[in-house]
Amino acid sequence: MEILHISSLYRHDNRHPAGGNEYHLFHKSTMNTTQNRFRFYRRRLLALLGCPALPEPVQADIEPTVRCNLRCPSCQHSRWSRNVPDMPLTLFRHVLDSFPDLRNIKLQGMGEPLLNRHCIAMITEAAGRNIAVKIYTNGTQFSPENIEALVGSGVQEVFVSCDHHHPETLRKMRPGLDFTDYMRGVSAFTRQAAGSRISVAAWALASRELLDDFDTFRQFVQYLGLSRLYVQCAITSWGANQTVENFPSLEEKNSVKNGIETTFLHTNLFSRETPCPWPFYHTYISAEGKVLPCCILSDPARRPLGDLTRIPFHRIWNSRRYFDFRKAISSGNIWEECRNCYRKRMPS
Ligand code: SF4
Ligand code: SF4
Image 1 (cartoon, rainbow, N blue to C red):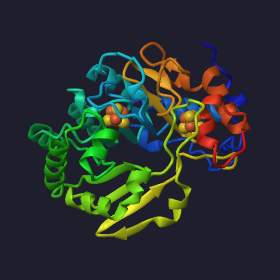
Image 2 (image 1 turned 180 degrees about the vertical axis):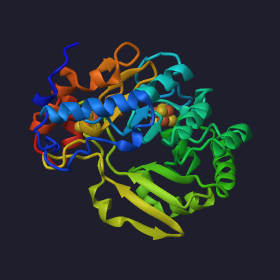
Image 3 (image 1 turned 30 degrees about the vertical axis):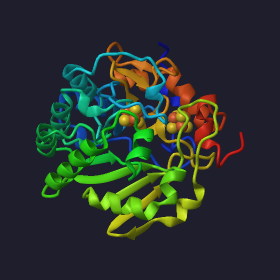
């Protein structure tokens, strides 16, 4: 793998190459190990030599498993034949060791995280390193044992998929889901989490079926014991050149009603002026330890950036592939797979 001279990547004023916020080159708070101290002084030396090193990400998506018990038509998981073992705890620890500046992780990728039998241990491991952990779950794995373990794990945020209130419609959206078990499990979890410091919210994909009867849906969310609801308005096509389903008219409808705080999200649509932040601030680690561009391009066969089991992360982060990725985003000459993320705000 070719390693680039860092000065060729960034201007010397430490600004986002696509224009925007200043980088924070040095994180003193992370100097708690010999390795981190070494990295801190290495960066400082490079900066003194006029070659500021790009800080490694403070946030990452880590994929504990690619297994899922559901087959949602909206998910790329339902269409691929990727079959890899769950991430072992040793690899998870190696991933955490690879990121000296890591402050928060999303412990979920393409799959249901609670199917990895080490998921709770992973959360506890990360929380023990003062890393904030959030997970997204399809809500089908809330057995009494899992609920108790999750509530005591140190997780900070749990997002529960909740796409419709009508059993038949929900089964169509989430094939494999047992509506009664789902309701029982989610309600039991929210009851137990209510006395803890965990922030729990519902996560819905916008659909015409949902929006046609949104008030009833809000009541259902309330019935499940959830008081916050996020509605994802732009539904990705996972890098394929297809029309993205989008509900832009909802942007103005954020509200609190029936005790439910509702937020409509459009954050995954970018433009030349507000470019995708992934190549600069964020990264994705697959269950087998591959470094990938983002949660949408999370199939290692598409745009792999490096293998964390063989190459240290800082070398992958400063490699030719990552450089090309950043250049594509900052120049506006985006990859074909990125077009749907820009479709609504930037002509292709
Ligand atoms: S539950 Fe989540 S990971 Fe599983 S198929 Fe549905 S969207 Fe994909
Ligand atoms: S623009 Fe590209 S890299 Fe960014 S989130 Fe979309 S697909 Fe991923």
